[in-house]
Image (cartoon, rainbow over all chains, first blue to last red; front, side):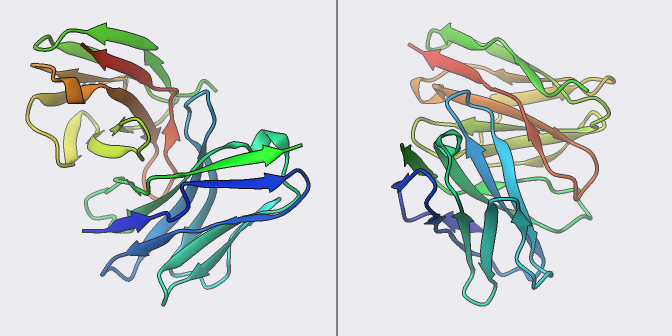
Length: 118
Length: 112
């Protein structure tokens, strides 16, 4: 079974600064997807960024980028130029790429609460 | 396009009772999945439905059951409620893989 570990229960950053959230995972599969989701107080899970394991290039979405190290099974999220609206719970998630069973199961970590200080 | 909507927003039930939670998928999405998020934890996969059939299930007992309707809306039913069932229940819909999941705002269930 796959597991996802987020070792930082809480992180804080000053507005306009950069912060990196850590995530490690364990799997025996070679093809999979990794995600970062943001959950603000509104409770809705919002997709921040996605990485396909077969792609060596790190994904980037505006101020959000990842450092994907497949051999180390590490998937960290970097938020540049942090904004007050970035404050939320951030979850790292894993999904198998096995499309035979249309497997959409996400395995989540326990989350990291990000505080942005003005 | 409308997103994923869940009802009710909050619900309080007594131990031993039964509850039904509802989810309307995002327009055009034929796959729906349900997650349970206990306080301070990440969401845990309950099950998923594709074209009205369950095609994946997490480590949850049979008293957690579901339905998906022809319009792709869905229900989560929980029988014989236990105190540990208190959690945020999230519904998510998607198109065929590898499209990402789109989540609703969840239903907060409290069992007393």
